[in-house]
Image 1 (cartoon, helix red, strand yellow):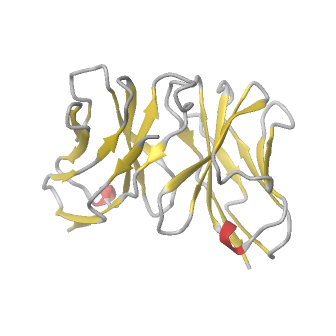
Image 2: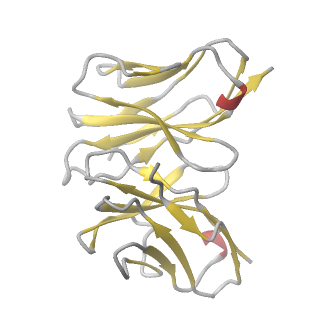
Length: 118
Length: 113
């Protein structure tokens, strides 16, 4: 079974600064997806960014980028030019690429609460 | 923009009562999921549903739980006899295919008293 670990329960960042949230995972599969979801106080889960394990290039979405280290099983999220609206809980999640290898369910980490200081 | 909608947003029920949580997935999506998040804890998978049957379920999804797609639009989660420990945020999600992004609804907060 896959596990996802987020070792930082809470982080804070000054507005306009950059912050990196850490995530490590454990799997025996070679192909899979990794995701970062944002959960603001409204509690809705919003997809921030995704990475396919077979792609070497790190995914980017505007101010959000990842550092994917497959050998180290590490998947960190970098938020540049932090804004007040970035304050939320951030969850790292894993999903198998193929059905039958654990289905398409998402396995989540425990989350990192990010505060943005004005 | 299409979205997953869940009703109600908050439900309070007495222990032992049955509850039905409702979800309307995105219309062209074929895979449906329920997840649960106990306050302060991580999001946990409950069940996935495809082609009118359960395709995968976790150990949390015991006989007290059931899912149904009663018509072409709704996807429901029923808890037959609620327990205090069922208090949680329940998220519905859907995806177009099994290997594409899952889009989440805004959640239903269930409080069992």
